[in-house]
Length: 83
Image (cartoon, rainbow, N blue to C red):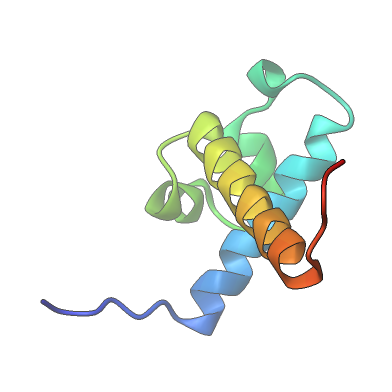
């Protein structure tokens, strides 16, 4: 099986797209955000966005998964206990 290595540029671009989506979500509902708007604010082409994501909902889902994974790692590292 071939291991797929993601370039630093791709990671940076995906992070920028996620950041822009998070910023836009502070202003409006997900259903009102377009790929065109995200691409413009992230300073990438719509084609670039579509190279990484299917649509706005896919960006949201991947961003959500990343946040939840990072939160889980923080909880594990710091041994947060529930009462």
